[in-house]
Length: 283
Ligand code: PAF
Image (tube, rainbow, N blue to C red; front, side):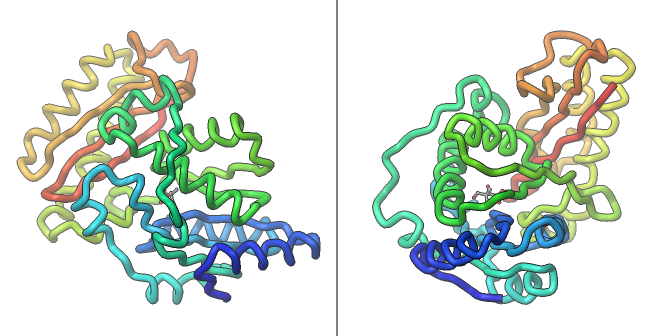
């Protein structure tokens, strides 16, 4: 596995691959890799000739400086996991390499970003769209791989690909969970043992919410039930819980009519760690 640190070296490598007719898979990450990432890498290796994994903790998508500062960074351990999973090249750029000058372009995804993560983390999706666009230009992948845990991010990137005509296929994989249900996340490493012990309650709350939605409950009743369930655990502070149309991510106006998939999404704080999770309800 090659480790590439510069945009120029990645562009040169990609040009050689493209000339040789190789199919390129890209797995963009911020590192601190877990099984969820490795599943994406293995899937990319199975479907493409070469696989690029990028590890870049992108400052422009963090609206909380402490979250950026404390985000786990483990490049050596990550690199050791990637080769066996089928990674051909690890792209490990510096901030200066990705942003030689500050980005001035601003993205506005309309209603899609006025809810949930977009509403609670101003500027977050502008940063995501900026860095993902840069990665798509530098890597020119045939396929790019993302996890469904970041449901709204996936929707934003789908819109990005459509609006800017990126000639690639987006491949989305289901959330990978620990045995106790906690969604795998790089931020889980920052949980204290006590926080880790109660963290699976986020998924429990979502499963209870899914039962309520299926039973025809009003979205506000579902939100109240989740808030009450999580309030019983003082270590957890709920930031939001939304009952949304899975296509548009807009709040469901009334009880589910089984006409379309529903996304149940939440964000919560455990100490200084902010986690998100979601489940789908389908007819
Ligand atoms: O999901 C992530 O890890 C990041 O948001 C991404 C897509 C790598 C962009 O920085």
